[in-house]
Image 1 (cartoon, rainbow, N blue to C red):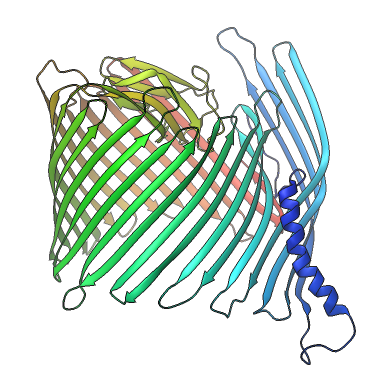
Image 2 (image 1 turned 60 degrees about the vertical axis):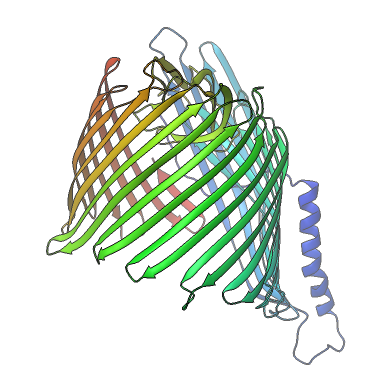
Length: 621
Protein backbone atom coordinates (compact mmCIF):
# COMPACT_ATOMS: atom_id res chain seq x y z
CA UNK A 1 0.00 0.00 0.00
CA UNK A 2 1.38 3.38 -0.95
CA UNK A 3 -0.22 6.68 0.09
CA UNK A 4 0.90 10.18 -0.88
CA UNK A 5 -0.68 13.07 0.98
CA UNK A 6 0.99 16.08 -0.62
CA UNK A 7 4.30 17.20 -1.97
CA UNK A 8 6.03 20.14 -3.60
CA UNK A 9 9.58 21.17 -4.39
CA UNK A 10 12.19 20.20 -1.85
CA UNK A 11 15.71 21.07 -0.78
CA UNK A 12 19.07 19.53 -0.03
CA UNK A 13 22.15 19.19 2.08
CA UNK A 14 25.05 21.64 2.41
CA UNK A 15 26.84 22.78 -0.73
CA UNK A 16 30.24 21.40 -1.66
CA UNK A 17 33.26 23.78 -1.61
CA UNK A 18 33.46 23.83 -5.40
CA UNK A 19 29.84 24.92 -5.65
CA UNK A 20 30.25 27.54 -2.93
CA UNK A 21 33.28 29.00 -4.71
CA UNK A 22 31.46 29.18 -8.05
CA UNK A 23 28.33 30.65 -6.50
CA UNK A 24 30.41 33.15 -4.56
CA UNK A 25 32.20 34.33 -7.70
CA UNK A 26 28.86 34.72 -9.44
CA UNK A 27 27.41 36.74 -6.56
CA UNK A 28 30.49 38.93 -6.50
CA UNK A 29 29.97 39.72 -10.19
CA UNK A 30 26.47 40.88 -9.33
CA UNK A 31 26.80 42.43 -5.87
CA UNK A 32 30.07 44.37 -6.30
CA UNK A 33 28.83 46.35 -9.31
CA UNK A 34 25.60 46.83 -7.42
CA UNK A 35 27.41 48.32 -4.43
CA UNK A 36 29.39 50.60 -6.67
CA UNK A 37 26.17 51.65 -8.35
CA UNK A 38 24.78 52.66 -4.96
CA UNK A 39 27.62 55.08 -4.28
CA UNK A 40 27.11 58.78 -4.81
CA UNK A 41 29.11 60.56 -7.43
CA UNK A 42 29.17 61.06 -11.16
CA UNK A 43 28.26 58.14 -13.39
CA UNK A 44 29.75 57.39 -16.75
CA UNK A 45 26.54 58.31 -18.56
CA UNK A 46 23.56 60.28 -17.35
CA UNK A 47 20.57 58.06 -16.52
CA UNK A 48 22.54 54.79 -16.58
CA UNK A 49 22.55 52.74 -13.36
CA UNK A 50 25.40 50.39 -12.58
CA UNK A 51 22.98 47.96 -10.89
CA UNK A 52 19.24 47.57 -11.44
CA UNK A 53 16.63 45.11 -10.13
CA UNK A 54 13.74 44.79 -12.57
CA UNK A 55 11.57 42.29 -10.67
CA UNK A 56 11.41 40.77 -7.19
CA UNK A 57 9.17 38.08 -5.74
CA UNK A 58 8.89 35.22 -3.32
CA UNK A 59 6.59 32.86 -1.50
CA UNK A 60 6.39 30.64 1.55
CA UNK A 61 6.08 26.90 0.92
CA UNK A 62 4.92 24.09 3.18
CA UNK A 63 5.35 20.44 2.16
CA UNK A 64 3.95 17.42 3.97
CA UNK A 65 4.42 13.87 2.74
CA UNK A 66 3.54 10.50 4.26
CA UNK A 67 4.19 7.05 2.79
CA UNK A 68 3.45 3.59 4.13
CA UNK A 69 4.48 0.25 2.62
CA UNK A 70 3.44 -3.21 3.78
CA UNK A 71 4.55 -6.66 2.56
CA UNK A 72 2.87 -9.86 3.72
CA UNK A 73 4.70 -13.12 3.14
CA UNK A 74 2.81 -16.18 1.90
CA UNK A 75 5.70 -18.62 2.33
CA UNK A 76 6.26 -18.39 6.05
CA UNK A 77 8.94 -15.69 6.14
CA UNK A 78 8.60 -12.50 8.15
CA UNK A 79 6.26 -9.70 7.17
CA UNK A 80 7.63 -6.18 6.75
CA UNK A 81 6.33 -2.64 7.10
CA UNK A 82 7.87 0.80 6.61
CA UNK A 83 6.58 4.32 7.25
CA UNK A 84 7.99 7.71 6.23
CA UNK A 85 6.89 11.17 7.35
CA UNK A 86 8.42 14.35 5.97
CA UNK A 87 7.72 18.03 6.73
CA UNK A 88 9.39 21.00 5.05
CA UNK A 89 8.93 24.73 5.68
CA UNK A 90 10.74 27.04 3.29
CA UNK A 91 10.93 30.58 1.92
CA UNK A 92 11.79 31.25 -1.73
CA UNK A 93 13.06 34.60 -3.03
CA UNK A 94 13.51 35.53 -6.72
CA UNK A 95 15.27 38.52 -8.29
CA UNK A 96 15.69 39.69 -11.89
CA UNK A 97 18.02 42.50 -12.89
CA UNK A 98 21.03 43.67 -14.81
CA UNK A 99 24.45 45.29 -14.34
CA UNK A 100 25.13 48.53 -16.23
CA UNK A 101 22.81 47.52 -19.09
CA UNK A 102 20.78 44.38 -19.98
CA UNK A 103 23.08 43.86 -22.97
CA UNK A 104 26.14 43.88 -20.69
CA UNK A 105 25.03 41.50 -17.91
CA UNK A 106 21.48 40.34 -17.26
CA UNK A 107 20.74 37.91 -14.42
CA UNK A 108 18.09 35.91 -12.60
CA UNK A 109 18.75 34.76 -9.02
CA UNK A 110 16.53 32.54 -6.87
CA UNK A 111 17.14 30.99 -3.48
CA UNK A 112 15.13 28.64 -1.28
CA UNK A 113 15.87 28.40 2.45
CA UNK A 114 14.04 26.48 5.16
CA UNK A 115 13.82 23.66 7.67
CA UNK A 116 13.35 19.91 7.22
CA UNK A 117 12.01 17.25 9.60
CA UNK A 118 11.76 13.57 8.63
CA UNK A 119 11.06 10.29 10.38
CA UNK A 120 11.55 6.76 9.09
CA UNK A 121 10.40 3.51 10.73
CA UNK A 122 11.08 -0.03 9.45
CA UNK A 123 9.66 -3.25 10.91
CA UNK A 124 10.80 -6.68 9.66
CA UNK A 125 9.49 -9.56 11.75
CA UNK A 126 10.66 -8.95 15.31
CA UNK A 127 13.24 -6.36 14.26
CA UNK A 128 12.26 -2.68 14.45
CA UNK A 129 14.30 0.40 13.55
CA UNK A 130 13.39 4.06 13.97
CA UNK A 131 15.36 7.16 13.02
CA UNK A 132 14.59 10.85 12.68
CA UNK A 133 16.47 13.79 11.28
CA UNK A 134 16.24 17.58 11.35
CA UNK A 135 18.13 19.79 8.96
CA UNK A 136 18.18 22.88 6.82
CA UNK A 137 17.08 23.37 3.23
CA UNK A 138 19.25 25.21 0.72
CA UNK A 139 18.51 25.51 -2.99
CA UNK A 140 19.65 28.10 -5.51
CA UNK A 141 19.26 28.96 -9.17
CA UNK A 142 21.49 31.52 -10.91
CA UNK A 143 21.41 32.38 -14.62
CA UNK A 144 23.42 35.26 -16.08
CA UNK A 145 23.89 36.27 -19.70
CA UNK A 146 26.46 38.78 -20.94
CA UNK A 147 27.15 40.61 -24.22
CA UNK A 148 23.97 39.16 -25.77
CA UNK A 149 23.94 41.79 -28.57
CA UNK A 150 27.62 41.30 -29.39
CA UNK A 151 29.17 38.68 -31.70
CA UNK A 152 30.67 36.98 -28.61
CA UNK A 153 27.73 36.39 -26.20
CA UNK A 154 27.97 34.05 -23.24
CA UNK A 155 26.11 32.78 -20.20
CA UNK A 156 26.82 31.14 -16.84
CA UNK A 157 24.56 29.18 -14.51
CA UNK A 158 24.67 27.53 -11.09
CA UNK A 159 21.74 25.45 -9.87
CA UNK A 160 20.98 23.14 -7.02
CA UNK A 161 17.71 21.31 -6.47
CA UNK A 162 16.41 18.32 -4.57
CA UNK A 163 13.53 15.89 -4.98
CA UNK A 164 12.14 12.87 -3.21
CA UNK A 165 11.37 9.83 -5.35
CA UNK A 166 9.02 7.14 -3.97
CA UNK A 167 10.23 3.58 -4.75
CA UNK A 168 8.26 0.35 -4.64
CA UNK A 169 8.98 -1.67 -1.49
CA UNK A 170 11.99 0.54 -0.72
CA UNK A 171 12.50 3.75 1.20
CA UNK A 172 12.18 6.99 -0.76
CA UNK A 173 15.29 8.24 -2.53
CA UNK A 174 16.51 11.78 -1.84
CA UNK A 175 18.19 13.05 -5.01
CA UNK A 176 20.27 16.23 -4.83
CA UNK A 177 21.54 17.63 -8.13
CA UNK A 178 24.06 20.46 -8.50
CA UNK A 179 24.84 21.95 -11.92
CA UNK A 180 27.47 24.51 -12.91
CA UNK A 181 28.02 25.68 -16.46
CA UNK A 182 29.49 28.19 -18.87
CA UNK A 183 28.64 28.79 -22.53
CA UNK A 184 30.45 31.14 -24.93
CA UNK A 185 29.80 31.74 -28.63
CA UNK A 186 31.56 33.46 -31.46
CA UNK A 187 28.96 34.46 -34.05
CA UNK A 188 30.61 34.70 -37.44
CA UNK A 189 29.44 33.83 -40.93
CA UNK A 190 32.74 32.20 -41.90
CA UNK A 191 33.94 30.66 -38.65
CA UNK A 192 31.12 30.16 -36.09
CA UNK A 193 32.38 28.70 -32.80
CA UNK A 194 31.11 27.86 -29.34
CA UNK A 195 32.52 26.51 -26.08
CA UNK A 196 30.52 24.73 -23.37
CA UNK A 197 31.55 23.61 -19.90
CA UNK A 198 29.26 21.79 -17.46
CA UNK A 199 29.82 20.06 -14.13
CA UNK A 200 27.06 17.96 -12.53
CA UNK A 201 27.03 16.24 -9.16
CA UNK A 202 24.15 13.96 -8.12
CA UNK A 203 23.89 12.71 -4.55
CA UNK A 204 21.44 9.80 -4.06
CA UNK A 205 20.59 9.21 -0.40
CA UNK A 206 17.94 6.59 0.55
CA UNK A 207 15.96 7.55 3.64
CA UNK A 208 16.31 3.98 4.94
CA UNK A 209 19.65 2.94 6.42
CA UNK A 210 19.61 -0.51 4.77
CA UNK A 211 19.97 0.90 1.25
CA UNK A 212 23.36 1.99 -0.05
CA UNK A 213 23.87 5.64 -0.99
CA UNK A 214 25.06 6.64 -4.43
CA UNK A 215 27.02 9.45 -6.05
CA UNK A 216 27.51 10.60 -9.63
CA UNK A 217 29.89 13.23 -10.99
CA UNK A 218 30.06 14.25 -14.63
CA UNK A 219 32.34 16.98 -16.03
CA UNK A 220 32.04 17.86 -19.70
CA UNK A 221 33.94 20.26 -21.97
CA UNK A 222 32.90 20.73 -25.59
CA UNK A 223 34.42 22.81 -28.41
CA UNK A 224 32.67 23.25 -31.74
CA UNK A 225 34.19 25.28 -34.55
CA UNK A 226 34.62 25.17 -38.31
CA UNK A 227 35.11 27.11 -41.49
CA UNK A 228 32.53 27.81 -44.20
CA UNK A 229 34.35 28.13 -47.53
CA UNK A 230 31.09 28.71 -49.44
CA UNK A 231 27.40 28.11 -48.80
CA UNK A 232 27.84 24.59 -50.23
CA UNK A 233 31.28 23.74 -48.81
CA UNK A 234 31.89 23.66 -45.05
CA UNK A 235 34.35 22.09 -42.61
CA UNK A 236 33.43 21.34 -38.97
CA UNK A 237 35.55 20.29 -35.99
CA UNK A 238 34.17 19.02 -32.66
CA UNK A 239 36.10 18.07 -29.53
CA UNK A 240 34.66 16.74 -26.28
CA UNK A 241 36.34 15.84 -22.98
CA UNK A 242 34.34 13.96 -20.36
CA UNK A 243 35.08 12.77 -16.84
CA UNK A 244 32.69 10.36 -15.06
CA UNK A 245 32.65 8.96 -11.54
CA UNK A 246 29.87 6.80 -10.08
CA UNK A 247 29.35 4.99 -6.78
CA UNK A 248 28.54 2.38 -5.48
CA UNK A 249 28.98 0.98 -9.01
CA UNK A 250 32.76 1.39 -9.33
CA UNK A 251 32.80 3.41 -12.53
CA UNK A 252 35.53 5.99 -13.06
CA UNK A 253 36.87 7.08 -16.44
CA UNK A 254 37.86 10.01 -18.64
CA UNK A 255 37.33 10.19 -22.39
CA UNK A 256 38.36 12.38 -25.32
CA UNK A 257 36.54 12.44 -28.65
CA UNK A 258 37.38 14.43 -31.79
CA UNK A 259 35.32 14.57 -34.99
CA UNK A 260 36.30 16.24 -38.26
CA UNK A 261 33.43 16.61 -40.75
CA UNK A 262 33.12 17.99 -44.26
CA UNK A 263 29.94 18.80 -46.16
CA UNK A 264 29.86 19.42 -49.91
CA UNK A 265 26.69 20.19 -51.88
CA UNK A 266 27.11 19.79 -55.62
CA UNK A 267 25.10 19.56 -58.84
CA UNK A 268 23.29 22.18 -60.92
CA UNK A 269 21.07 23.23 -58.01
CA UNK A 270 23.33 21.87 -55.25
CA UNK A 271 20.74 19.12 -54.83
CA UNK A 272 23.33 16.39 -54.20
CA UNK A 273 25.40 16.09 -51.01
CA UNK A 274 28.56 14.30 -49.88
CA UNK A 275 29.18 14.10 -46.12
CA UNK A 276 32.58 12.91 -44.83
CA UNK A 277 33.32 12.20 -41.17
CA UNK A 278 36.47 11.10 -39.34
CA UNK A 279 35.99 10.25 -35.67
CA UNK A 280 38.48 9.25 -32.94
CA UNK A 281 37.50 8.22 -29.40
CA UNK A 282 39.83 7.39 -26.50
CA UNK A 283 38.63 6.36 -23.02
CA UNK A 284 40.78 5.48 -20.00
CA UNK A 285 39.67 4.21 -16.60
CA UNK A 286 37.43 1.41 -15.40
CA UNK A 287 37.46 -0.03 -18.90
CA UNK A 288 39.41 1.34 -21.86
CA UNK A 289 38.08 2.04 -25.35
CA UNK A 290 39.98 3.18 -28.43
CA UNK A 291 37.93 3.67 -31.58
CA UNK A 292 38.60 5.19 -35.01
CA UNK A 293 35.84 5.48 -37.62
CA UNK A 294 35.58 6.84 -41.16
CA UNK A 295 32.15 7.37 -42.73
CA UNK A 296 31.17 8.61 -46.19
CA UNK A 297 27.54 9.36 -47.06
CA UNK A 298 26.47 10.28 -50.60
CA UNK A 299 22.91 11.55 -51.25
CA UNK A 300 21.65 11.92 -54.82
CA UNK A 301 18.38 13.64 -55.74
CA UNK A 302 17.57 12.27 -59.19
CA UNK A 303 14.10 13.84 -59.58
CA UNK A 304 11.20 15.12 -57.49
CA UNK A 305 9.98 11.57 -56.91
CA UNK A 306 13.21 9.55 -56.92
CA UNK A 307 16.30 9.75 -54.73
CA UNK A 308 19.05 7.47 -53.43
CA UNK A 309 21.82 7.48 -50.84
CA UNK A 310 24.93 5.39 -50.17
CA UNK A 311 26.98 4.78 -47.01
CA UNK A 312 30.52 3.47 -46.46
CA UNK A 313 31.61 2.98 -42.83
CA UNK A 314 35.02 1.68 -41.68
CA UNK A 315 35.60 0.96 -37.97
CA UNK A 316 38.66 -0.05 -35.91
CA UNK A 317 38.09 -0.47 -32.16
CA UNK A 318 39.59 -2.07 -29.09
CA UNK A 319 37.49 -2.26 -25.94
CA UNK A 320 38.27 -3.49 -22.47
CA UNK A 321 35.78 -5.25 -20.22
CA UNK A 322 34.51 -5.26 -16.63
CA UNK A 323 34.27 -9.02 -16.15
CA UNK A 324 37.83 -10.07 -16.97
CA UNK A 325 37.20 -11.55 -20.41
CA UNK A 326 39.89 -10.75 -23.02
CA UNK A 327 39.66 -7.27 -24.59
CA UNK A 328 37.70 -6.96 -27.84
CA UNK A 329 39.67 -6.01 -30.95
CA UNK A 330 37.50 -5.54 -34.04
CA UNK A 331 37.82 -4.20 -37.57
CA UNK A 332 34.69 -3.84 -39.69
CA UNK A 333 33.54 -2.38 -43.00
CA UNK A 334 29.94 -1.60 -43.87
CA UNK A 335 28.39 -0.73 -47.27
CA UNK A 336 24.73 0.23 -47.78
CA UNK A 337 22.64 1.60 -50.64
CA UNK A 338 19.02 2.83 -50.54
CA UNK A 339 16.71 3.93 -53.36
CA UNK A 340 13.33 5.57 -52.66
CA UNK A 341 10.58 6.22 -55.17
CA UNK A 342 7.39 8.24 -54.60
CA UNK A 343 4.85 6.63 -56.96
CA UNK A 344 1.95 8.78 -55.86
CA UNK A 345 1.42 11.27 -53.06
CA UNK A 346 0.23 8.43 -50.82
CA UNK A 347 2.45 5.54 -52.02
CA UNK A 348 6.21 5.25 -51.33
CA UNK A 349 8.50 2.33 -52.13
CA UNK A 350 12.05 1.72 -50.92
CA UNK A 351 14.81 -0.70 -51.90
CA UNK A 352 17.72 -1.29 -49.48
CA UNK A 353 20.85 -3.49 -49.76
CA UNK A 354 23.89 -3.87 -47.49
CA UNK A 355 27.12 -5.78 -46.89
CA UNK A 356 29.14 -5.91 -43.65
CA UNK A 357 32.26 -7.77 -42.60
CA UNK A 358 33.56 -7.98 -39.01
CA UNK A 359 36.97 -9.40 -38.19
CA UNK A 360 37.86 -10.07 -34.53
CA UNK A 361 41.54 -10.44 -33.67
CA UNK A 362 41.05 -13.57 -31.52
CA UNK A 363 39.51 -15.57 -34.35
CA UNK A 364 35.82 -15.02 -35.24
CA UNK A 365 34.90 -13.47 -38.58
CA UNK A 366 31.34 -12.53 -39.54
CA UNK A 367 30.08 -11.56 -43.01
CA UNK A 368 26.53 -10.31 -43.52
CA UNK A 369 24.74 -9.49 -46.76
CA UNK A 370 21.09 -8.69 -47.26
CA UNK A 371 18.39 -6.55 -48.76
CA UNK A 372 14.92 -5.22 -48.07
CA UNK A 373 11.92 -4.08 -50.11
CA UNK A 374 9.22 -1.98 -48.44
CA UNK A 375 6.01 -0.28 -49.54
CA UNK A 376 4.21 2.34 -47.44
CA UNK A 377 0.68 3.60 -48.15
CA UNK A 378 -1.16 6.46 -46.39
CA UNK A 379 -4.38 7.88 -47.75
CA UNK A 380 -7.13 10.10 -46.36
CA UNK A 381 -10.65 8.91 -47.14
CA UNK A 382 -14.18 9.98 -46.36
CA UNK A 383 -14.11 8.09 -43.04
CA UNK A 384 -10.66 9.16 -41.82
CA UNK A 385 -7.26 7.79 -42.81
CA UNK A 386 -6.10 4.40 -44.07
CA UNK A 387 -2.48 3.33 -43.59
CA UNK A 388 -0.75 0.12 -44.68
CA UNK A 389 2.83 -1.15 -44.83
CA UNK A 390 4.63 -4.21 -46.21
CA UNK A 391 8.31 -5.17 -45.73
CA UNK A 392 10.26 -8.10 -47.14
CA UNK A 393 13.83 -8.66 -45.92
CA UNK A 394 16.40 -11.36 -46.55
CA UNK A 395 19.80 -11.70 -44.86
CA UNK A 396 22.63 -14.21 -44.89
CA UNK A 397 25.17 -14.38 -42.04
CA UNK A 398 28.36 -16.38 -42.54
CA UNK A 399 30.52 -17.07 -39.46
CA UNK A 400 33.96 -18.66 -39.52
CA UNK A 401 36.89 -18.94 -37.12
CA UNK A 402 37.18 -19.59 -33.41
CA UNK A 403 35.04 -18.43 -30.52
CA UNK A 404 35.41 -15.31 -28.38
CA UNK A 405 33.61 -14.05 -25.28
CA UNK A 406 32.28 -10.50 -25.62
CA UNK A 407 30.87 -8.33 -22.86
CA UNK A 408 27.75 -6.22 -23.49
CA UNK A 409 27.51 -3.21 -21.18
CA UNK A 410 24.35 -1.17 -20.43
CA UNK A 411 22.00 -2.70 -22.99
CA UNK A 412 18.66 -0.92 -22.57
CA UNK A 413 15.67 -3.22 -22.05
CA UNK A 414 12.14 -2.65 -20.73
CA UNK A 415 10.12 -4.86 -18.39
CA UNK A 416 6.51 -4.98 -19.60
CA UNK A 417 4.32 -7.25 -17.50
CA UNK A 418 3.65 -10.03 -17.97
CA UNK A 419 6.21 -10.41 -20.79
CA UNK A 420 9.77 -11.43 -19.84
CA UNK A 421 12.94 -10.07 -21.41
CA UNK A 422 14.12 -12.76 -23.86
CA UNK A 423 17.61 -13.41 -25.25
CA UNK A 424 17.31 -15.93 -28.08
CA UNK A 425 20.18 -18.40 -28.60
CA UNK A 426 22.65 -20.42 -26.59
CA UNK A 427 25.46 -17.87 -26.53
CA UNK A 428 24.38 -15.97 -23.38
CA UNK A 429 26.22 -16.68 -20.12
CA UNK A 430 23.28 -16.56 -17.69
CA UNK A 431 25.49 -16.28 -14.60
CA UNK A 432 27.01 -13.04 -15.93
CA UNK A 433 23.69 -11.17 -16.15
CA UNK A 434 23.67 -8.00 -14.07
CA UNK A 435 20.80 -5.47 -14.02
CA UNK A 436 20.93 -1.86 -12.86
CA UNK A 437 18.46 1.02 -12.98
CA UNK A 438 18.70 3.79 -15.54
CA UNK A 439 20.46 5.97 -12.94
CA UNK A 440 23.35 3.43 -13.07
CA UNK A 441 23.51 3.48 -9.28
CA UNK A 442 20.69 1.19 -8.12
CA UNK A 443 21.85 -2.43 -8.53
CA UNK A 444 18.99 -4.93 -8.59
CA UNK A 445 19.34 -8.29 -6.85
CA UNK A 446 18.76 -11.65 -8.49
CA UNK A 447 15.92 -13.72 -6.95
CA UNK A 448 14.76 -10.69 -4.95
CA UNK A 449 14.10 -8.29 -7.85
CA UNK A 450 14.30 -10.51 -10.93
CA UNK A 451 14.58 -14.17 -11.91
CA UNK A 452 16.65 -15.73 -14.71
CA UNK A 453 15.36 -18.86 -16.47
CA UNK A 454 17.63 -20.80 -18.82
CA UNK A 455 16.12 -22.87 -21.66
CA UNK A 456 17.93 -24.90 -24.34
CA UNK A 457 17.27 -22.18 -26.94
CA UNK A 458 16.93 -18.93 -24.96
CA UNK A 459 17.34 -17.08 -21.67
CA UNK A 460 14.37 -15.32 -20.04
CA UNK A 461 14.44 -12.61 -17.35
CA UNK A 462 11.27 -11.92 -15.35
CA UNK A 463 10.81 -9.23 -12.75
CA UNK A 464 9.63 -10.24 -9.27
CA UNK A 465 6.36 -8.32 -8.59
CA UNK A 466 7.34 -7.68 -4.96
CA UNK A 467 10.85 -6.54 -5.90
CA UNK A 468 12.25 -3.09 -6.58
CA UNK A 469 11.77 -3.13 -10.38
CA UNK A 470 8.58 -1.44 -11.59
CA UNK A 471 6.42 -2.40 -14.55
CA UNK A 472 7.37 -0.45 -17.71
CA UNK A 473 10.74 0.40 -16.16
CA UNK A 474 13.76 0.75 -18.45
CA UNK A 475 16.77 -1.11 -17.07
CA UNK A 476 20.41 -1.56 -18.11
CA UNK A 477 21.55 -5.16 -18.63
CA UNK A 478 25.19 -6.30 -18.60
CA UNK A 479 26.07 -9.79 -19.79
CA UNK A 480 28.73 -11.89 -21.51
CA UNK A 481 27.97 -13.73 -24.73
CA UNK A 482 30.01 -15.88 -27.09
CA UNK A 483 30.45 -15.31 -30.80
CA UNK A 484 32.10 -17.67 -33.20
CA UNK A 485 31.63 -21.10 -34.63
CA UNK A 486 31.42 -21.97 -38.32
CA UNK A 487 27.91 -21.89 -39.80
CA UNK A 488 25.66 -20.01 -42.19
CA UNK A 489 22.37 -18.47 -41.02
CA UNK A 490 19.73 -17.44 -43.58
CA UNK A 491 16.89 -15.24 -42.32
CA UNK A 492 13.77 -14.21 -44.25
CA UNK A 493 11.29 -11.85 -42.61
CA UNK A 494 8.01 -10.36 -43.75
CA UNK A 495 5.79 -7.81 -42.08
CA UNK A 496 2.37 -6.49 -43.07
CA UNK A 497 0.11 -4.05 -41.22
CA UNK A 498 -3.11 -2.21 -42.01
CA UNK A 499 -5.04 0.31 -39.92
CA UNK A 500 -8.09 2.49 -40.45
CA UNK A 501 -8.43 5.58 -38.22
CA UNK A 502 -12.04 6.72 -38.21
CA UNK A 503 -12.88 10.35 -37.49
CA UNK A 504 -15.01 9.46 -34.47
CA UNK A 505 -12.01 7.86 -32.66
CA UNK A 506 -12.29 4.16 -33.57
CA UNK A 507 -9.20 2.48 -35.13
CA UNK A 508 -9.26 -1.24 -36.00
CA UNK A 509 -5.93 -2.77 -37.10
CA UNK A 510 -4.27 -6.01 -38.18
CA UNK A 511 -0.56 -6.97 -38.13
CA UNK A 512 1.13 -10.04 -39.56
CA UNK A 513 4.80 -10.93 -39.29
CA UNK A 514 6.78 -13.99 -40.31
CA UNK A 515 10.37 -15.10 -39.81
CA UNK A 516 11.99 -18.15 -41.39
CA UNK A 517 15.55 -19.13 -40.42
CA UNK A 518 17.79 -21.90 -41.68
CA UNK A 519 21.19 -22.94 -40.28
CA UNK A 520 23.74 -25.03 -42.15
CA UNK A 521 25.21 -27.36 -41.22
CA UNK A 522 22.32 -28.63 -39.09
CA UNK A 523 24.59 -29.56 -36.17
CA UNK A 524 26.26 -26.12 -35.97
CA UNK A 525 26.74 -24.62 -32.49
CA UNK A 526 26.51 -20.98 -31.45
CA UNK A 527 23.11 -20.14 -32.97
CA UNK A 528 19.50 -21.33 -32.78
CA UNK A 529 17.06 -21.00 -35.67
CA UNK A 530 13.69 -19.47 -34.76
CA UNK A 531 10.68 -19.65 -37.08
CA UNK A 532 7.88 -17.28 -36.13
CA UNK A 533 4.32 -16.55 -37.32
CA UNK A 534 2.52 -13.74 -35.52
CA UNK A 535 -1.04 -12.49 -36.10
CA UNK A 536 -2.38 -9.53 -34.13
CA UNK A 537 -5.91 -8.18 -34.52
CA UNK A 538 -7.08 -5.29 -32.40
CA UNK A 539 -9.03 -2.10 -32.04
CA UNK A 540 -8.50 1.25 -30.30
CA UNK A 541 -10.99 3.92 -29.34
CA UNK A 542 -9.51 7.27 -28.40
CA UNK A 543 -11.82 10.19 -27.88
CA UNK A 544 -11.62 12.48 -24.90
CA UNK A 545 -12.05 11.66 -22.11
CA UNK A 546 -12.04 7.90 -22.89
CA UNK A 547 -9.41 5.57 -24.33
CA UNK A 548 -10.18 1.85 -24.84
CA UNK A 549 -7.91 -0.83 -26.36
CA UNK A 550 -8.30 -4.54 -27.10
CA UNK A 551 -6.19 -6.98 -29.11
CA UNK A 552 -5.52 -10.68 -29.57
CA UNK A 553 -2.06 -12.02 -30.49
CA UNK A 554 -1.32 -15.50 -31.83
CA UNK A 555 2.46 -15.94 -31.59
CA UNK A 556 3.50 -19.25 -33.16
CA UNK A 557 7.23 -19.76 -32.55
CA UNK A 558 9.61 -22.69 -32.51
CA UNK A 559 11.15 -21.20 -29.32
CA UNK A 560 8.46 -19.41 -27.26
CA UNK A 561 4.91 -19.82 -28.64
CA UNK A 562 2.08 -18.02 -26.86
CA UNK A 563 -1.47 -16.68 -27.14
CA UNK A 564 -2.20 -13.30 -25.58
CA UNK A 565 -5.33 -11.21 -24.94
CA UNK A 566 -4.88 -7.57 -23.90
CA UNK A 567 -7.60 -5.20 -22.69
CA UNK A 568 -7.09 -1.62 -21.57
CA UNK A 569 -9.22 1.33 -20.48
CA UNK A 570 -8.46 4.90 -19.52
CA UNK A 571 -10.36 7.98 -18.42
CA UNK A 572 -8.83 11.43 -18.12
CA UNK A 573 -10.55 14.67 -17.16
CA UNK A 574 -9.39 18.21 -16.56
CA UNK A 575 -11.63 20.10 -14.15
CA UNK A 576 -12.48 23.77 -14.53
CA UNK A 577 -10.72 24.67 -11.27
CA UNK A 578 -7.37 23.37 -12.61
CA UNK A 579 -7.26 19.84 -11.19
CA UNK A 580 -6.77 16.74 -13.31
CA UNK A 581 -7.96 13.18 -12.77
CA UNK A 582 -6.63 10.08 -14.52
CA UNK A 583 -7.89 6.50 -14.18
CA UNK A 584 -6.31 3.57 -16.07
CA UNK A 585 -6.83 -0.20 -16.03
CA UNK A 586 -5.15 -3.06 -17.94
CA UNK A 587 -5.86 -6.80 -18.11
CA UNK A 588 -3.51 -9.26 -19.84
CA UNK A 589 -4.02 -13.00 -20.30
CA UNK A 590 -1.00 -14.96 -21.61
CA UNK A 591 -0.98 -18.68 -22.35
CA UNK A 592 2.57 -19.97 -22.96
CA UNK A 593 3.40 -23.38 -24.36
CA UNK A 594 7.19 -23.78 -23.84
CA UNK A 595 7.06 -24.52 -20.97
CA UNK A 596 3.27 -24.51 -20.57
CA UNK A 597 2.06 -21.92 -18.10
CA UNK A 598 -0.79 -19.45 -17.76
CA UNK A 599 -0.32 -15.84 -16.67
CA UNK A 600 -2.99 -13.27 -15.81
CA UNK A 601 -2.00 -9.72 -15.08
CA UNK A 602 -4.27 -6.93 -13.82
CA UNK A 603 -3.36 -3.33 -13.00
CA UNK A 604 -5.58 -0.45 -11.89
CA UNK A 605 -4.14 3.01 -11.37
CA UNK A 606 -5.80 6.27 -10.39
CA UNK A 607 -4.23 9.69 -10.07
CA UNK A 608 -5.64 13.03 -8.89
CA UNK A 609 -3.58 16.22 -8.99
CA UNK A 610 -4.71 19.55 -7.58
CA UNK A 611 -2.68 22.76 -7.37
CA UNK A 612 -3.81 24.53 -4.24
CA UNK A 613 -1.60 27.61 -4.48
CA UNK A 614 1.69 28.34 -6.21
CA UNK A 615 4.31 25.97 -4.86
CA UNK A 616 1.81 23.69 -3.06
CA UNK A 617 0.40 20.75 -4.96
CA UNK A 618 -1.74 17.92 -3.59
CA UNK A 619 -1.60 14.61 -5.38
CA UNK A 620 -3.22 11.27 -4.58
CA UNK A 621 -2.17 8.03 -6.27
